[in-house]
Amino acid sequence: MEQFWSSVLAFSEEVTQQVGAILSQQFGKVQATNKPDGSLLTESDQWADEQIRSAIAQKFPDHGVLTEETVHIFPDTEWCWVIDPIDGTTNFTRGIPVWGISMGLLYQGEPVFGYVHFPILQQSFHGFWLENSGLEGENGAYCNGQPIHSSPDDLSTNHLFSLCVRSADILGQPFPCKTRIVGVCTYSFLLVGIGAALGAVEAIPKVWDLAAVWAIVQGAGGKFVSLTPTSPFPLQPGEDYGKKPLPTLVLSRSELASTFEPLVQSVAKSSNSPNLSY
Image (cartoon, rainbow, N blue to C red; front, side, top):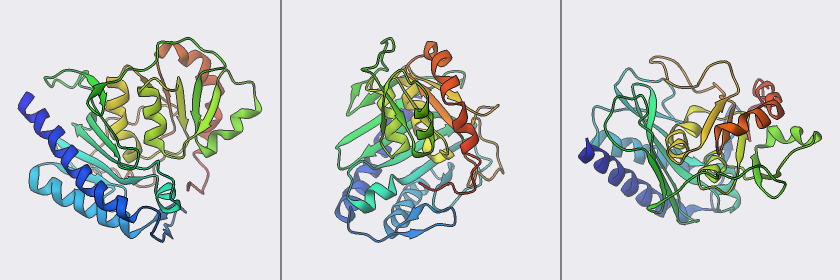
């Protein structure tokens, strides 16, 4: 199993570096069109999607694939990659350097490995979360090869909490931390994984926003709290995840749930809005 994980890590690093190098040349120079849900799509998204799917098919022919741009039906395969070729397309098109390539590997519908590469920031995150999977290996998370850990700190007004656009209305109530809006779901959650923020909330993430960071952030000691009655994972074969928002709260440690969960409950309601674009 150790050899398998090594090959998965090496493959993810190689693919995201190669794709990221080309995308970096297109960064801030491409035109975008609107998808039916109002989010942006570029030729760069489509090109990166095709490159990553082709690489997976060649290296892991027995693995399924689910991606933001093409394949939304979860396949009936033991292993499946869930891909977001450019997380942060709006930033990518506007010349804002916070955008990344996200690859999550699921086993029996549960994320067990994640890799997210931010080419312009020169940051690459990966992690393993094998709890209750029955697979052999160690949990852990890393940024540029160095271990990362969520913060053990108590709340204070000098700590950070990351919002999404649709969660900004919670600022109408007293809030125990300073807030930030990053505009990229994976990076927002990874800020919790590296200990920079105590929490983050997203109203409308899709499965490709969560799959990789689900493993990385938990490998770093963070906790996910679903703002719907059921957990987003395991994914179910045959189900279409293309239009399914999965409102999620991420915390540096589970003890903070009693403080933050009541404050962000309205986020789950906003996920039902007919306009789900960023």
